[in-house]
Length: 88
Image (tube, one colour):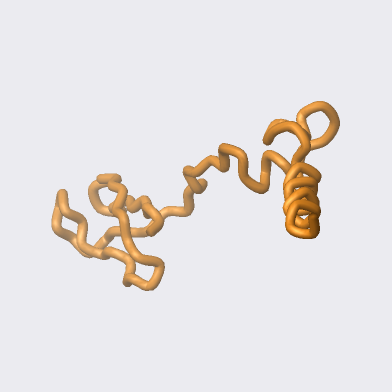
C-alpha cells in the first residue's frame, strides 16, 4: 500500500497516511477539522536492492556481474551435469 501525503488548505497541517490505492482521498483535517485536506503529489520512497533484476540486467561494464560468478551460465552447467549423471 502506498503512503500518501496530505496538506490542509485552511491551516497548513501536513500528514502522511498509508492507504489502499482504491481508497477515497481524505478530506477532513485532523488538526482543524475542516474539509480542506488535499492529496499532494510526491516522489515514491523505495529502492531496488539485492541480487535481483536490476543488479544483473541493467548495469554495464564491470558492474554487470555483481550477482556472482557465472550468472546464467552457472545454472546451465548444473543442468548439463545432472543430465550427464543420469545418462551414465
